[in-house]
Length: 324
Image (cartoon, rainbow, N blue to C red; front, side, top):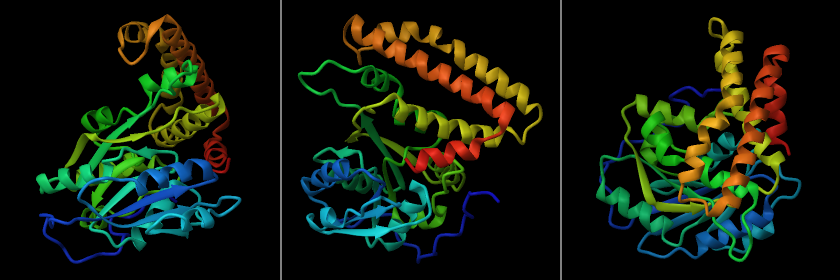
């Protein structure tokens, strides 16, 4: 059975005017799984927001952590903790959205730190653009002052979280920094589960219904670089499994997957000019680190694709991603 939710699966609500009141209430929804230290930083950033917005609540939805962050959530104003046993950030976000009372639903990941004016930017942008129902914001990988960049940090500054490209080229925004009018979310329906790419699926459903998705460059959150190559592998294992699940129902799927694997394996060579010219990296050391990390992850991706052709084991990749 498909993990894609039906369009009208989310409870229907009375239609509201697209124009916003002067004081816009916002519910912030944060899915969480075994990241208490990151969650504490996330909630502290939300508590320190500036601007003329009305914060209805912060809803943390735990997705099966070894220890519930109840005491942590109790230490922040307007913050409550819910639980969602179904694995995946999509179901966790759906639980938060169903319980939310704000006119706007703002989604941020537990390992993201919202800029001080994040909520104010959401309010002002939607108030100024009544025809826009969905905002996707910028996700930046910060540099830790006084410390040399790691290979993962250098790589992710170039290749991770290109939200502007996701929106302009593919028609969806990442769910780690997303704001949606409540009535738009009700019309599009809930996010899917871990067997599909839930942000891409939701965005494409919204676009098909005629909703406008706008990139908001000043709506910024920081996402620290991953600390281990294993984390990056898990991320790509999930994406590969999603792509494979779509490809295997198409003609000549084995040949097409083989072609993709070969293209991915040799693609780092084509990235050399981009790495040489980008202003996001400094000096030869950072550029070299980014290239080495790029080479490692793309060879890993090619190997995984070849393995899926032989063993058809995408379910294992998905389960390992979510339950680490």
